[in-house]
Image (cartoon, rainbow, N blue to C red):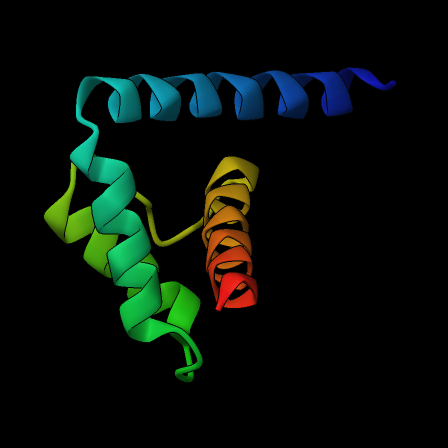
Length: 88
């Protein structure tokens, strides 16, 4: 693995660690994030709308220029909603 790739991976891991700490400190973050994702699911620009509302209403901040960790978080929210839909 190249030095740049290792640096990127390390940054992603650090961001995810920070996010996990926030979720464990405030369990409402996960519930609220899923509710927000559910609200915008299927709409044009849903990912951006989800990120904006999560940033505005929780302790999680998703900047305009997303990092790999930010993208992963949005993707995981979609996966959770897909799993939820598969149950019903």
